[in-house]
Image (cartoon, rainbow, N blue to C red; front, top):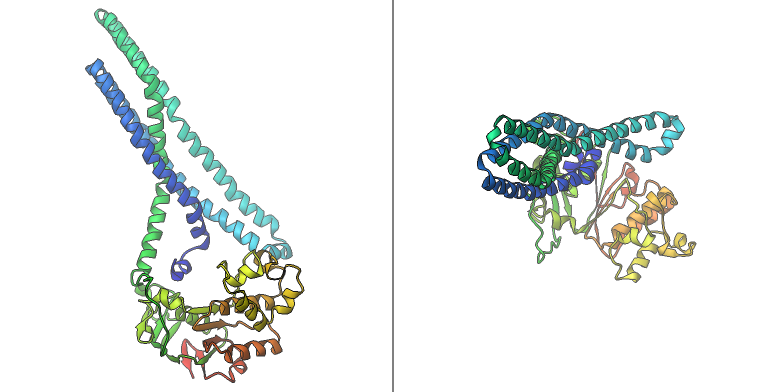
Length: 455
């Protein structure tokens, strides 16, 4: 999923689409299968009745078709409205669940628990009501058609009484219809019920299609990975007149976050980027990492536009972000990020280099110690060490750090900077920080000011 697509979408809507809407869409496919099977069954029953009594059967079939169409018309608008409401309340419920769990401390401190609970219950109750209504409408088709068959038979009996001469001939016909109805009614009910489910879930199909179309548009310029291709960074990384806005290109105007950026980073150089909060440092990094595409200009590595080799470019980079993601797993799996560890010696070397050795030695299970959800057992500084260890573990050619030692004391911060600068791996380093003093031993330092670089 392109990051720019995520940025322009609601997280809660994306989670809802991935979970609920996908399930509804699968239900739609299943409903189509039932419609096809029951349609064939109804065709078979209709042919059987037509061969027995063509005129009466044709009238009955036409009346059933009219009933199905009327039933569908009556429910269509209501089902479409229910579908839209369900989608809205699912997203809002998801929002209050995620926000409530992520902000539980704030909710407790500011005393907003009852209000948060009230908002959640409102949308949850609405969903319960919508579920009841949709299930009711879905189940009413069988009794409706049972009554409809009784009504048709009643009409046939009246017709037979009015035509006294044909009573004896009509009784076997009614018997055949009663026998056929035993199979016809369940089949017709399933057909109509599945048709209603398709109408109810059609919104899900449209939403998923629109999302896939947007992702496809964002990925249209990106080449697919080739298994036999390996990007080997040899010369330099260049920003050539790069500008960027979070708005879509057609709505750019003058609202640019970054403007006319020129930058040249040679292989093996240590480059610092500084600037006040809100200057665009993190946005610049996302461009550098290939998460966003420039609106104007291009970013090249060894004269290759990274837009066309994005996946290969990202395969040689490691990044230590500001907001560190910690899995509810062991130290080992947080550093290796779930990959199988094949070189334990190298992993232990990294643990020592980032200063995690003392912490792990104090724990009975060492690297296999479980950290806990979000790393709640760890200090911010310890989380940053894990993130740095994770970045080094993947043996990158380029390492990117975004305020990555802000939670460390000066002594440990200096040690990690020295370790990365003096590393025998000869990383190309791009380090973003508001602290200019940490870049004293760097090859270059640029300041981001008003969306442009000042060297």
